[in-house]
Image (cartoon, rainbow, N blue to C red; front, side, top):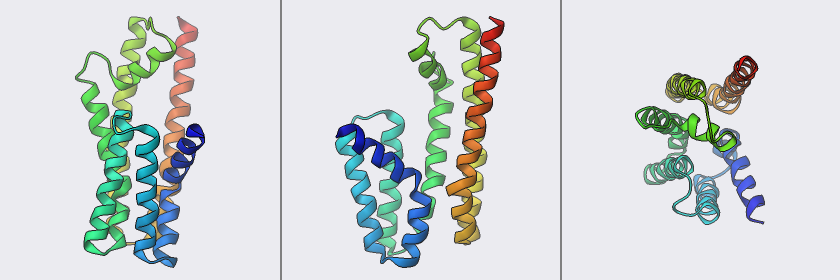
Length: 183
């Protein structure tokens, strides 16, 4: 049950742009805010307050946009969630570059605990690529909010952004496969 609930919350967060887009058009603000509050509660219940750092920060971002929208009685505050997520991810990934192990290195070590030096150098480069992506993606997400065009906002944040992430993941996998063949 816990696994299903986590999966459900993840799917709902991925579908966030579509939910907000249709919610703003067809539902009163309070209905949207209650749904988002439910997602926050589910995330806290099934991940715990001390859940993973990234998950906790993303949940905090959702709580912030929810609170701002509620306080201002304006659903447009909900549009800032992708911007905050990219900003949080940028700072977490960039901060990890100042640590002995970057986020990507920690992830790589799950599968390969004895990561060779070449792998460490590679994971730092990948972490930098993600930092650049989060900066650019966050800037474009900001531009979609400022434009005020809901169709552009949902198209970019609900589709293009995910396609770009997928392309980076696929490209990284291809490069990593080539590097490991050389070793």
